[in-house]
Image (tube, rainbow, N blue to C red; front, side, top):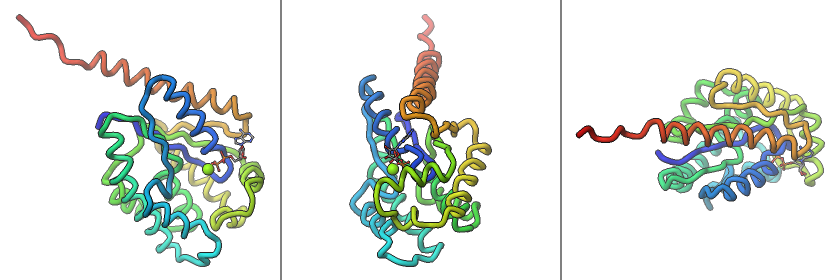
Length: 222
Ligand SMILES: Nc1ncnc2c1ncn2[C@@H]1O[C@H](COP(=O)(O)OP(=O)(O)O)[C@@H](O)[C@H]1O
Ligand SMILES: [Mg+2]
């Protein structure tokens, strides 16, 4: 696979969508072909599942059913959007991915993390991000920000304790995979957060470029 897969993660209101927009502009200016997408969603089927998952009118969904709806959306999204874009050599920026399922369905709902990992691996065919940016901030700050968007969706409406478990799970996941996941202080102003994002992403591009140059086949010997 030739492309670059970057995911943005974190609790409600941490600034994922804001930073995703800024980052996509930044990368397009550098001449990269960028696909911006989100989970759950990114295809008509997955967006329909998103509607059901986030609409409070859907009512109760059992934790296992919820887990599988996210996985079903992800399988379609990876197959129809993410993998093809990476195969074309593009950069894919995705608002939430597998780590959100671990944090929300594992940390939040209490489903066994290893079972979620197995299901994630099945849904993605083993595809993992090259880089994950985890935007971290206190739950109260995040919920205050997302509250300004209007009425809470089915997940935002969960109690603060639920969101605290989600945040803690995200931090545990990041500590276990420090090479893939960079934690970014999301309580700072938008411009400061974006500066941190650029430092990490530009560093990854540089590393890739060096690897391509240094790793090219040696010239044929006469
Ligand atoms: N660093 C920041 N400081 C203050 N407000 C922010 C910051 N980043 C985003 N916001 C605002 O907070 C709200 C939630 O941001 P958003 O990017 O939608 O978060 P998410 O996608 O993670 O839920 C938006 O109104 C956005 O303008
Ligand atoms: Mg968002």
